Image (cartoon, rainbow, N blue to C red):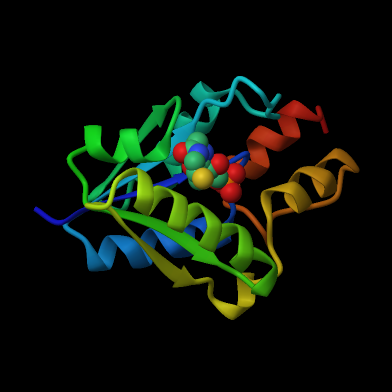
Length: 159
Ligand code: PNS
């Protein structure tokens, strides 16, 4: 079983994330989406909400599993019995931080590799931060995130 983990905050999941999830699911037997519970950050959506939304928007992809985790990504990857970490690369601005993380993770757990998928051009500009900000100003974000996210954002900002 070739299993990969796609770790992230997913606060909230965007069409850019979904593009990476679909493509990873076509490469691996199973893709585990790892939603980080980060006690040092105050997310817009709780981990439970993010997991629920991710499950909803990936129901049509049979080999995708959604779980939450705390602590180091590499420990979660090992616990999942996976061999690969998936990360999306949008632009050079992502690269330095992603390279740093991949190298650190490789030192921590040499048996785990990071695989980068280049985000499709139409989503290259997109981020959860932008989606959150637009929604907070009551702007329509349906071009950027699936309907379940739009609904959840509308409820958060009570449109
Ligand atoms: O969606 P994000 O916020 O860009 O995802 C970042 C994430 C969750 C992959 C990264 O912050 C992470 O792996 N956090 C867990 C802590 C960890 O493993 N740190 C060591 C990496 S250098």
